[in-house]
Amino acid sequence: MNRLRVSGYKSHRGLHRENNEDSFFVDDKVGVYVIADGMGGHEGGEVASNIAVNTLGKILNFFGNVQEKKIPQIIHKALQEANDDIIEMRKRYVELSNMGTTVVLAIFFNELVYYSHLGDSRAYLYDNKGMLVQLTTDDSLATEMVKQGIINDNEVRTHNLKNIVTRYLGTTHLIVPEVQYYHLGEGDCIILCSDGLTNMLDEREMLSILKENISEGPQSICNNLVDQANKKGGYDNITVIVIQSIS
Image (cartoon, rainbow, N blue to C red; front, side, top):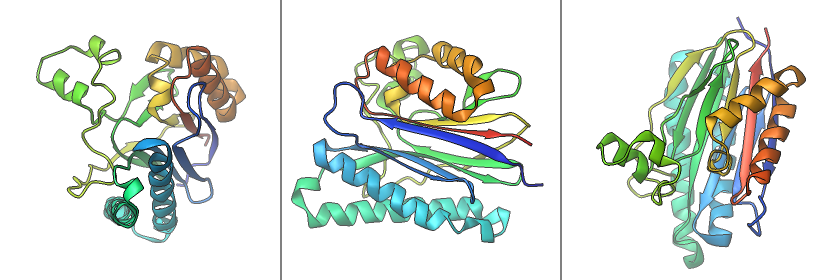
């Protein structure tokens, strides 16, 4: 059974950045959604995130014609090609030699959503019972410190190493991430976002906005999440995609 879905999206450069180094890809027809948050300076970050979403979008756009069991394989292939494309561009232009990008993606197939990520761009589930669950775990030094017992969960959001990512696209030693999936219920929402959102809003604030705007649909949720992140400071680029399963 193919679940119908509706989506919304919004990207904003924030209040302190000159340009927007986030890029995103949305294809409601096929069911492919990607956010990439570029790193590596004013120009490099924007180039890296654009390469990532263009390569991933091009490859993943054809997944609907394959067997379900091959979806993880296709996601791995797409991430590897995006990584290779970024490395190739880095080799050609010295001014882009430090660029890379985080990425988070979701693919909807029948009643399932497949998702994967590198870095600190995140995927969340807002289920039809009103619960908000983080589906991905940040690839960051601060998260590694939590695993090692050096700091606790409450210290991560304000730690000075939280934005140093340990995995990303644009590395010569790419560790291909795990592909996970979730069985969607009617009304469930998947939220993809860059860290410009989660650095400004904690999960309590996100949940409040979701509950207040769910009846208005995914675009209203996106608009209000981004607007509130800017009201809280808007120190980074902010990108959000919300996809809701409706039947």
